[in-house]
Length: 128
Image 1 (tube, rainbow, N blue to C red):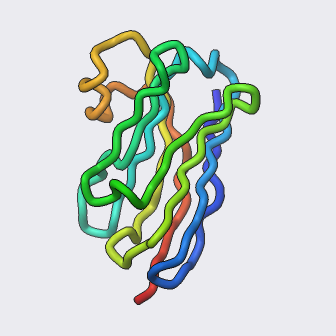
Image 2 (tube, one colour):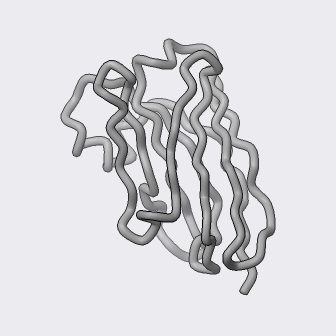
C-alpha cells in the first residue's frame, strides 16, 4: 500500500498549487481520501476530504479554505487532487493525504483515526 503526495513547493501569497495523491496497493474507490496539514508547532488538522464515487462524491472543506481549495478524484488514475488557489501564509504546512475505508458515517472521517493509510507528506510554503 502506498500513498505518494506531490506538487508542494514555495509560492507567493495569492498564488496556486495543485497537490496530487497517487495511491496503489488497495481498492482505491472503496476509500475516503482526505487531506490533512500540520504547521510547525500546531496539531494536524483536516483540510478536505472526498467520498467514494458511489456516495456521490461528497466533499468537505475546512472553513478557512472554503472557496479557495477544491478536491477531486480520478479513479481511473487512482489519484486525488487538491487545487489550492489564493494561497495565504497561514496555509504553510506539510500536507498529507490519507485513505480511510468507506461505509461509515461521513462526519466520522473528520477524525484522523478513521484513516488506515498515510502518505509521507509534501511541504507547502506560502511567502508573504
